[in-house]
Image 1 (spheres, rainbow, N blue to C red):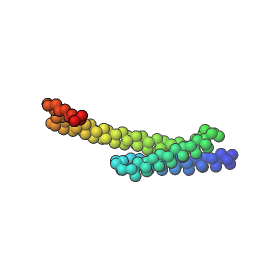
Image 2 (cartoon, helix red, strand yellow):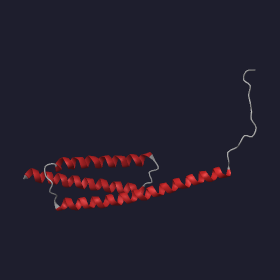
Image 3 (cartoon, rainbow, N blue to C red):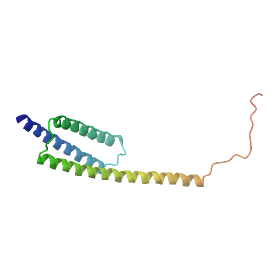
Image 4 (cartoon, rainbow, N blue to C red):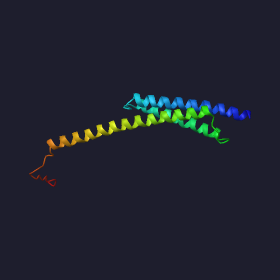
Length: 129
């Protein structure tokens, strides 16, 4: 009974760490446009930390599957944060796709006004002389 209580406390602490990591991810996603390498490295670090926490929780969860009410609340909170993160990423994805579309249109427009030069006369260079 004591080991179950210890495991339960460990799980609660791990879930709280997971919630903190998810919150940091959301803050980073909302605040940054990922135009530089530093923000991408930070996001990758947070994702790796999240994976590590999930693996540790899975190791503890192999012994039993009952969740306390506090754990359920933390998990629901994590799900809400993840939903917000996903929505923020989708919004950023739409912005980037619009920018790419504008660049392609601009490139097409430039090519329309600057057609490729066509050579009308042929040239022959005699290399045997």
